[in-house]
Length: 319
Image 1 (cartoon, one colour):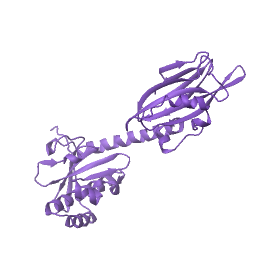
Image 2 (image 1 turned 90 degrees about the horizontal axis):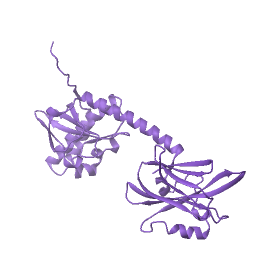
Image 3 (image 1 turned 120 degrees about the vertical axis):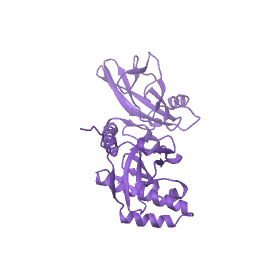
């Protein structure tokens, strides 16, 4: 018996509607060369779209740059948007060619690259295989990974995305999303600090903020039961965006308007996503506030823990 690896491909008829669309869009281009490029790109994307829909994957042609007339004109683009997964580049290859061309403008922001062989009649196509990543313009077809590997890869991405969405749903119900504060989406209980702090505290508090850029502050009342009495403090969180990915964060504790000092031995802790304490501060007998400052990246999780005597409370945050 011979021990051969079966290399899965797929051949079929290009949908008539796709052929008509490719012909129409091709005729609208400024040069024959650009027209041919648009024709082949549309045929390749349409064929991959039909195949992946048949295999059970959700696609969105309208969200693809290859379906945008302006992007067709400005770029050599043949992407297919897969819902919740990203864009898959569908690069056309003519019969007899041994290399697939991947333009520099599409060598990033793609979940993969499929080589699609288009027949000379423009009526049939064949999925030859795929690359997960590319770093050069011309790639030998003999280096393609099997189409079967593409299906497994997309299935893995789908499962990861499902898990990610489930985690995001869990986070949204138990974590305060700080990025949403800048969209004026504020969780219940968080208020503007002017309603919670005395004027002097607000003035002192403002000196802690980075006034060189936009910031957002919100406060929340936190109560502790101590010796049959309720002691309340104000938790203040201030956000200062440093970049699209990084945010400076100040966490402060203040007394309420009716008090001058914070309770003695009040502990402020910053916990990482695993619950380990990474920063802490503690009041003495005459502290008017305590604060901790740090930076975090978009998507990071952290918690603020307040401890007074044998009672504690935790607020969870997503950056």
